[in-house]
Each structure stands twice: as C-alpha cells, then as structure tokens.
Amino acid sequence: MTSAPGFSDIRIAHARIAPHIHRTPVLTSAAIDSAVGATLLFKCENLQKAGAFKARGAYNAVLALSDEEAARGVVTHSSGNHAAALALAARTRGIDAHVVMPKTAPAVKKAAVRHYGGIIHECEPTLAAREAAAAQLVDDTGATLVPPFDSSHVVAGQGTCAVELIEDAGTHFDVISCPVGGGGLLAGTAIATAALSPGTRVIAAEPARADDAARGFRLGIIQPQVLPVSTIADGLTTAMSAMTFAVMRELVHDVVTVSDEAIIEAMRLIWSRMKIVVEPSCAVPLAAMLEGAWDARGQTVGVVLTGGNVDLDRLPWTG
Amino acid sequence: MTSAPGFSDIRIAHARIAPHIHRTPVLTSAAIDSAVGATLLFKCENLQKAGAFKARGAYNAVLALSDEEAARGVVTHSSGNHAAALALAARTRGIDAHVVMPKTAPAVKKAAVRHYGGIIHECEPTLAAREAAAAQLVDDTGATLVPPFDSSHVVAGQGTCAVELIEDAGTHFDVISCPVGGGGLLAGTAIATAALSPGTRVIAAEPARADDAARGFRLGIIQPQVLPVSTIADGLTTAMSAMTFAVMRELVHDVVTVSDEAIIEAMRLIWSRMKIVVEPSCAVPLAAMLEGAWDARGQTVGVVLTGGNVDLDRLPWTG
Image 1 (tube, rainbow over the protein chains, first blue to last red):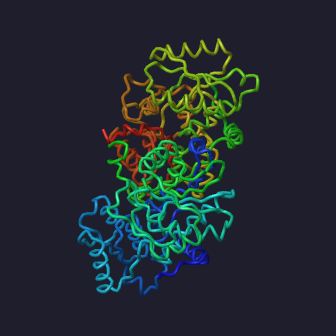
Image 2 (image 1 turned 30 degrees about the horizontal axis):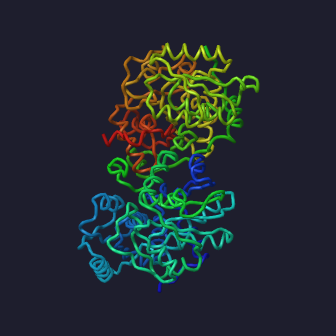
Image 3 (image 1 turned 135 degrees about the vertical axis):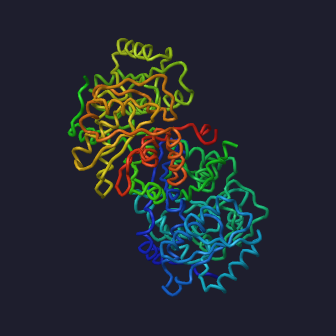
C-alpha cells in the first residue's frame, strides 16, 4: 500500500508549493449562513491556479522530484483537474507532462491540458487501456507517474488547503467538510485537521449516485464504485485507494451522501449568493448541509470549495 | 452643486463601514495577464455584501445619519445595486428603506430589494415620476434621500474600495481603472488614488453605447446621455452629476470607451479564468484593455470589479 503522509510532510509541502500557488481567500455569505442555520467559512480553491485544489498536490509531486527525475518528465492518466494541474506544475519546472486521455474525452478537458502545455496521448476509453498506456510511457521515457490521489506527495499537497483554512479563519471549527472522490483531498484535510485542530470533526460528503466512500465507511472495508456511475458531480466518480481509505477510517468522523438535485441547487446558491463559479462536485458539502444529511445547525463549519472548472455553455440550470 | 468629499472623508467612511462590509480579496490571473500583456490586480467588489461596491456608499450614508434622522428612514429612486445595498444598510441600522421603482422594473431587481427588507413603492416608468414619488416620500415621512452617486457620503464610501486596493496590493500601480456610470465610484477612486498614490493614473472605462462621460471629458462640459441607451452594461447608463463630473475633470487621466462585444468577451474571460461571477458593467475596464482602448502593455494595473448581480438564467452567451 502507498504510504500516507504525516503532518510534517504537509508542512514541508506547504513551504515547497507556497511560492507557486494562490493563497486562496476564505469567504463567507450571510445568505447561505441563514439558509443553513450555521456559520460557514468557504476556502475557495475554485480560485486556485488551474481552477482547483489539484494544483497543490501536483506542484508538490513535481517539485519534490530530484533534478535527474524531473528531467525525464511526469505522466498521469487522470483526465480531469489533476491532469491540467500537473501540466501547469510541470511547465513551471520546465519539464514534460504526459497525459494519457481516452479518445472520447471532452474537447474542453483536452483544451485545458493543452492550455498548460501538457502532451496528450490518446488511448481507448477503458481504465485498463489508460493504465497500460501510462505504464508504457513510464517505460519509454523514464518519466515519473503522478497519480491523482494515491500518492503521499499528492495527499500532502492537498493537505495544505486545510492548513491555510485553519490558519486564516481566526475561529475554531466545529467541523471541516469536503467532498470525497478518490480521497486525496479528504485524506490530506483529515491529517492536517487532526494535527492543527484535534477538536474539529471532519465530515466527507459524496453524491448518493457515487457512494463508495460512504458504503466503505459504514462497512469498514473498501468498496468498489458501482458501475456505471452517473452523477452531475463528475469529479467524484473515482473509487478510493487503500491508502486514502485507511486515512479516512482512522481520522474522518462521518461520510454523508446527497442527491444530484441538492447538488445542483447548492451550486446555484453559491453562484448567485457568493458570486463565484463552482463546479458541481464543489457544491456537494453545502448540498449535504442543505439537505440535512448531517445537522450543521448552530455550528461553525469550514467548507472546502474544490474547483471551478465548468463548461459555461452547459450549465445544469440552462438545460 | 453637491460638495465632493475630501480624502479625510474617505478615511472616516472607512472606519465607519469597515465592521459591516467585506474586505474583498484582490485576485490575479496569469491567463488574463498574458492576454493583456500587463500585470492586473482585481479588487473583487462582486464579492462585496449585496454583490456590489454600492454597499460601501450606502452603509456610509446610512451610518452617518444622526439617530433622529435615521429614525425617519431613507429613500432612493435608483432601482439597481444601490437600492439593494441601501436596503441592506438600513436593515443593519434597524430603519426603513423606501425604494421607488418603476412598475416595469424586472422582477429580479424587486426581489433583491425585498430580500434585504426594502419597502418598494411603484411608480410610472419615467425619471420625472420617480423623482416626484421620492420627493413625496421625503415630505410624507421625513426620510433622508440617499442618491446613488450625487452625494458626498456615497462618494466617500465608494472611495474606500481604492483605499483597500492600494493598501492590500503590495505593489505600485501605474494605473487604476474602473467603470463609469453616474461617476460615484470613479470620483471616490480618483480622490483616494490622488491622496495615497499620486503617481498612479486613473482611467475610466465606459460602454461606447453610453459614452456621456467620455464625450464630457473631451469637451470639458458635462454631457447628457443620448437616449435611448442600449448596452449590455446596464449598470452604466446613468449620466454623471455636476459633482462627479467636476472630480473627473480634476483627477481622472483618461476616459475610454468599448464595444458591447468586447464587454461580453471580457465578462466571459473573467468567469472562465478567474472563476468568479461578474455582471457586464464590471467587465468594462478589462474589455477596454483587451480591445486596445488604451495601451496597458507592460503596466501594473488595479482593476475594480464592481458587481456580480446577474440573472443566471439569462447569460449573454447562452442566448
């Protein structure tokens, strides 16, 4: 099993990536506080470089490489925000980022990777084909594989988000809540929170239509995603890894699920009240509070808004 | 003529309103810098309370009232962001805000005023009818008229935005740019900038389809708006007052105009790259740089993003 980072790794990651990332603002909204009946502080990683918290893990993984390793480049076969973030981090270091993507990937995702200078390698649209293509690239080029979440460096990078949230909030959190897909952000958040604010509960939120984490949390055994997965929160369809699952079991206090309808409603509430662009996956923790998946009333809650990469021509409410 | 505030009035305003407003973040975007060829720092008043910088002037005007004056309430006949902001400020002080609106005002504007507890008084859709109805309300209730820009208190409040921008930027600005409608924000920005950063030029930007400020700036005499006005930047269709015009003539270095097409393009660029929701009026200064209305290349520019109140069901690019 990939080893999990300790809190010291998160501190090291933060010092390493701080010159390259935005220290994103923590915003509040009286209207949303009133809708939930709680005091919410939103850590706005949708305003992060490349539009998502993924820049943290990607920069940490790329900057942790030795010069010799770095010279051979990096590879990933994730096609979402991680791929764009890895391309950006690699460009900053002046090295190649190889991104294996299925032929069928949306043009907007390919454009994001190209925008940051990533080299796209197309393959058949199956996980096996993607893994094989990535392994072949590692063999051919000697590049380092940087997975989207099953990596100590990546999780340590994602953990820096909660460090900033806790440092900048100026208040004690009863709860910190973030979405869970593969579990990289969740694991990093839980490790940082346990170290910096041990009285704070960590609650993960997940679409009911992609509920592997919640099922695994209840059963105590890692669960596969039930395929095919279809949720508006398309950034959260990945199943967890053994490492992120183990961290969740040890340090996370609850995992709750929400309907797609509540996700869209929460997304629109964030756009209309906070005047920020968030992607559906990003709205899942707020949706969980609004839907009553856990009782946030009267509590002070830190919420990680994870990303803002949406197709502005295809919003869920404009059909 | 209404008297213009001095910089000391802006300092007083800032101390008065700071507990009630957001100190909005200053954000940057490498992609937009690259598109313009300049270093841009965006002061995000779209993230301000009630979604626009107007909260600054409204809070200052309401909090400057004596208890006796305040008890009689406030009145305005502006129907845009100022009305919502005034209702919010009045609610904070526990007093009535009377808002005269034309019967034909969009439901979304009425809803915003009601959301903050404003009392709507409908009238015929002419400026004369609005002014008459507001004057009648002042007579009947003894409430204080708070105009959207032709007020020393309102301009002093709007000037606090540039104070924060200059204080928080940590760099010298070659230029600070903001949109101009009635000129309240522009006048406050120019007064604050002249005092805090006298080497910084102030450049106002205006839709070519509502170019009274630019024409007046060239001719040296205040100009009326040529009616009917039709621009996507519907927050900037007001003509200036004698006071805001005089401040512009004395302290503003240039007034430039832009096409509606450039405004929509700049608006979309801000949404897609910065992940924030801005209204069309808000995108005018960036549009001016992108369209080459003035040459920003190589300069460090502070840009005031003025507001984020848009109808999410009717975006300019979703037809």
